Length: 298
Image (cartoon, rainbow, N blue to C red):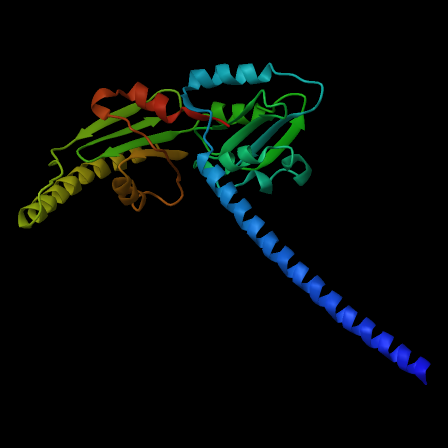
């Protein structure tokens, strides 16, 4: 009887100890969960702060001639380790959605973050040496149409060369209130026709009240008159040079939006940021600017 009682007491002690151990384990687990969440939050904060501090080593615009010299240098780079990565990324395509996960892990996170910040309308070409002697991207003047990548002993530049050498029948529009440019080139080399359209448009009014509203209304009428002249020249240029492969546009955002509603739906439109001042720029310089590429050093 005493033996059974002792066994029962031992079982009760063990049960209480088990409950105590489980409570201790749960408390420790909760502490670890809180610690993990805290560390995760701190890591995300640090990552967000570091992302904000990340900057490109350099950004430059390459003229068509400079791009050819650039590609020549890239083609001269050779290795025997198969560690030169080339990736073609159309607009809206991330590197993570194109290359394999195994290769993606070899691209530093900082460089992936910088690359993801770039959203040029024509897409990007990444040239990346895993020893980081070459680590940069280039946005060509014309769109990259399909994603592809290659890892080898040299950089794959043939697709980019093909994009750059294509003879586009191209219309160029540079739109500003009171001064706009329309030019057509049959081969993306030189303008066959070009016209500078000027109109008298009032400067922006800084005062408030009724006089400002009246002034702005008159300014809007001036701009509408200017755009009528632009549409007239645009119609004539399209009719005389059909078919057109693409239209490259730059200038005032509101005017670009207005003219896009007017353009034929079947035309490919490439919109480019530009600070071209038409009064100081001729057709040759305009064409060189819109045909330039943008280089980003990661």
